[in-house]
Amino acid sequence: MNDPKVSVGITVKNGEKYIADAIESILQQEYEPHEILIVDDYSTDETVKIAQSFPKVKILERNGTGIGNGWNTAIKNATGDLIAFLTHDDLWTKDKLKLQVDFLAKNPEIIYVVSHLEYFLEDENYIPSGFREELLTQTPVALTPHSILARKNVFETVGLFDEDLTTGEDLDWFSRAKDLNVSYGIIPKVLLKVRVHHTNTSLHAKENNQNMLQILKASIERKKRAGK
Image (tube, rainbow, N blue to C red):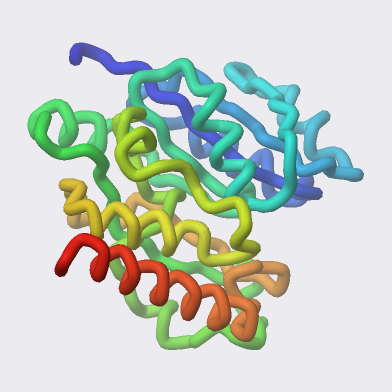
């Protein structure tokens, strides 16, 4: 596939503080995106107004709530050959799309590709409760939608994100992809920068643990049915 079109989905609610930075990190890519799909979760601030001031942006109406519904709305409306995602408070490095598009072009058997990530503090003097400080010195593989570039048909194979999960919808999706032996690649470089601040939903430990247990049980059941 020569010069595939890349659709980028962003799900956001009341993200006026960060949304411009996120969109700029997409528009500054060395590989130009085809479209930026903003799925707004009924924001009451200036999020939509700010997003509409940028080129390539389309505002989408959702028919539900939650991050999973936002990702799914972007997938269903994407017109590109490949799809990527970004949260309103995170950033991409400028070479993110180019490296991943090139990787998929060279490896047609690979369905999606991710990268490594690094965390950065919004306020250097404030570490939110629930965030492990040692993560600031690590650059782990980012099995997260914000890191992924995927062939759109992967969502026909694996399915969409589980909209019933309030957190962990990404872990559930990657778990299903693993159980189906979906082939993926890893760019051995930091291409995603994750902002750490006090409103990160990923810091809600109790709810996250409950959902992770549910996801683990579902994976075990899938393996039993498959005879693994």
